[in-house]
Amino acid sequence: MNARALRRACRAEWTKLRTESGFRWLLVALVAVTVAVGAATSSTVRPPVGDPARLALGGVAAGQAVAVVLAVLVTGGEYGTRMIQLTLAAVPARTTVLAAKAVVLGAVVAVAGAVAVAGSLLAGRLLLPGSPALTDGPALRAAFGSVLYLVLVALLALGLAFAVRDSAVASGAVLTLLYLFPLLSHVVTDPWLQRQLARVGPMPAGLTIQVTADTARLPLGPWTGLGVLALWAAAGVLLGGVVLRRRDA
Image 1: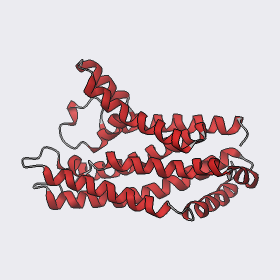
Image 2 (image 1 turned 90 degrees about the vertical axis):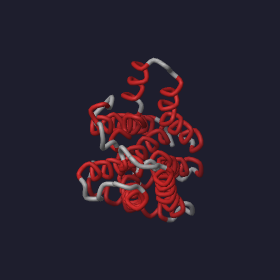
Image 3 (image 1 turned 60 degrees about the vertical axis):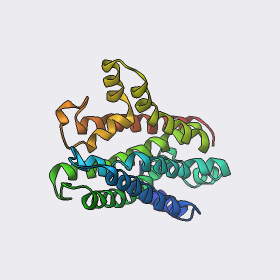
């Protein structure tokens, strides 16, 4: 992949994204939903609090839905308006198109996610007695990991949007994939099966990165769990790349 071509493609993708009518509102919504849900969770809990950082970051599970919509907008919107034909005409190397969209989307979600996570931890610090300082080691890991979680979810959605080429279908597929495993964990009664669902599901595995207390009891370690989500994201992007290369726009 040509680095110069990738830089040009990234500039083009950034120009397209920031001129989308709903782009800024989606970024605001990602931050607002994440902070609001986290603050609401923190405000309803009474001491003693076992894992205040995880409670404060509880809004990430809601904010990820906005990240999915934003990711689908990057690709699904172009297929809906047939603008993808112009994109591929300007950048014939389809791998470069996918990489540019992934880089721009990842950077945007990382910035918005960092603001959302910082706001959530600050709200938790104010609302939860005994909350860790923002510079506390486990809290920093949970914060940094939560930002990576949002980026990986967005990349998973990007890949599936390229694969199915329909905004509504892509959004529904990703959200179902994310929320299905936690739902099944509440339906099944077998503890072993519940543990396996928590180990393989992108959402339950990925969100273990937020746990700062009793990590030895987790089905997966925090970074291992985030690694499971990374594998899901990589599979989604790979699938999207294969479809992009083999099908006409």
